[in-house]
Length: 81
Ligand SMILES: [Cu+2]
Image (cartoon, rainbow, N blue to C red; front, side):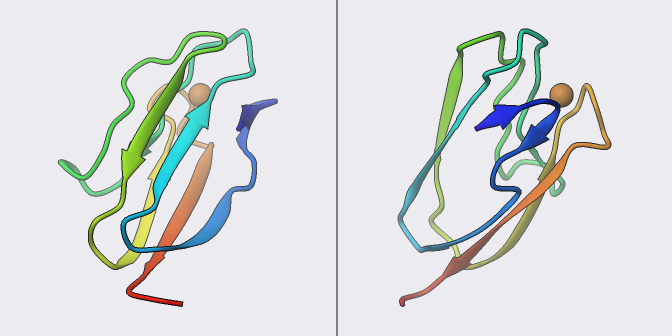
C-alpha cells in the first residue's frame, strides 16, 4: 500500500516467484521504482492505480518513489522459506 507518502509496509521479505502489488491510496501520484535501474518501475501511479511485479531473482531490492525520493522501501527475496 502507498499511503500518506510512505510504502506500507516499507520492508517485506518474500519467497522467490512471489508477485508484489503496490496500490496507491494517496490522491498524489507516486511510483515504485527499483534503485537499480532496469529491475522494476511502476511508472506514475495515480490515485487508486496499482502495479504488480513478480520477483524472480533472490536478493535485496531497494526501491523509492521517483517523484518523492524520500519515500523508500525494500523487498528481500529469498530462494525458499
Ligand atoms: Cu511519491
